[in-house]
Amino acid sequence: MAQIRVEKLTKTFRLAERRAGLAGAFAGLVKRTYREVQALAQIDFQIESGELVGYIGPNGAGKSTTIKILSGILVPTAGHCEINGRVPWRDRLAHVRHIGVVFGQRTQLWWDLNRKLVELHLAANTIRWREINHGAALQIAASQRKGTTGREHP
Image (cartoon, rainbow, N blue to C red):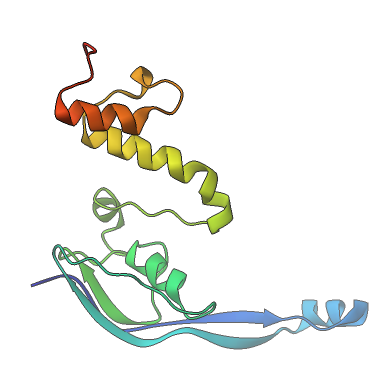
């Protein structure tokens, strides 16, 4: 049974169009015109438990919109998805207890990425961050696996 199941997922945004100039701005207050932008067009996929996937595509392909729907932030226009038997936008509180999502530009995340990866590595190897000095985290983690640190840990 699939852990993530997406069927005919569609998301359409309704955007107000702005007219140029001051007269256009006033006209927009009286009567707005809208256009629809389709971010997702009936996408289907399944991800099995333990399966590792990459979700890639060009700018504007709907990657972030899909992830926002899967995390319960957005509600789709049409279609259905279930993650571990839950519909993310209906069971949002229960759903978000079991997931982690980070949004941002790559350049914004880069400075935190190395520390976050080291912290994750350390947590997995039960080393406390405060015991690590001057970026020696990976060396200590590797030697601790071998049992050769020479340090006593409380």
